[in-house]
Image (tube, rainbow over all chains, first blue to last red):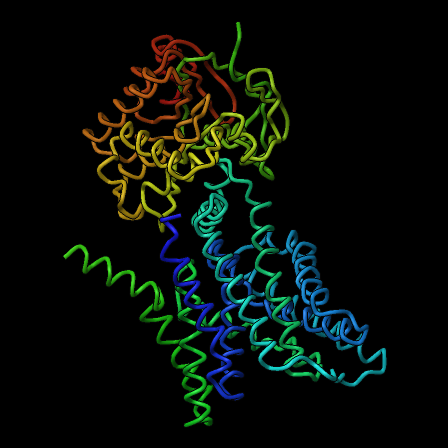
Length: 306
Length: 244
């Protein structure tokens, strides 16, 4: 227990801060907070697969979008949120289970392209289904208040951070990292690589599905091209790169950094937003490939050594 | 005769290349068997088939009476066969200790707790003369260090048979001597069964009780080192036909 003391303390502090935040902030900043929590939840989940195994998913928008679609259907069927949100996670996890086995047979750029293509494929399937049903966008009425959504997202973000932290320190996580370093050596040492990769993929899909469901209640207007937007996938990867590392602090820092930056840029220089974001990514990849957390750890080690 | 490892009629074809052709041999519990042959003779292929990294085209492999050919490498490892790689495959982004701890967490022993796995890993690192380098990134080791890390990692899976693929190749004379000493110590202390691929002939002769010679995928000789060294078929394979 003592070993995880710092983590538990920070987690409790974060939850307490999140708990009082809506009472202190106006609607605009609750919205920003909700967005931040969303990215934290998504990026932490992504890290469980891509940070630990090195299988970079460029298609996590598919789980987000699918979760949103489940919410749309659940809302019109008048299912309670406590059923629909977990159901969204379940459906996302099932999709990962279904497509994971064939996808995870290829590595490197092939896996990246495959996950991207898969997300686009599912997007157009949903577009076609909606068109076939004669729906051109759907509206959700009487959705919960912004505060409620904020608190649900707080729980999801905390769960994602705990998942990332826990997996990173588990026997399972040690196996995943060995797979990332050298898959052939890993399986020769007795690690069931196929089962582990698939498990990581499913674990990394569930929370994004639930996040998509909650964000659907926030936007209240369902448009497949919007909820399956590949920008979601790109942003997750960007945050992970900027944050660096395969441990919870990395994606956390990356998400905070990018959300704060985009708030500042949208407010002050909206025409430069994408330009600066692109330049920033190039700078990180070229000069700071270990990311923010990696750099902090490096400096810390150097100070201790000195 | 209770052989721990039985290889029968093992063959492997890669497209038009017959890498291994109808090779049979046995390894008794506790012995050190040498596997000798020129480049491309099929030595490493034999290891890959035994460890499950590749599937044989024909033949069978039994470990202590249980058929293991065609099993996935992680299953073979759990049953007690460990191998090293000729071209070393360290987990470069992890420390030396983490490399070996992972092996202790999986393999045949499958320790569930990190504390226990790390303790075991430190013991094994001491055996491989790497104890003082435990906290370093594996990528920072020299070739000799990486070769020893290969051995340590394989050892931490708690194997019944250890397949060593050229752990001496590319080392300096003093490094070879140290590596040989490590292998001997492992064999003596643990009574571990070893199969050794080696190009350093003198080392192989001194280390092994028995040697199997492969040539173009076929077994051309088998026996005690001295007998194999004087075998005209082996001499011809290595140096060409004797002058008439």
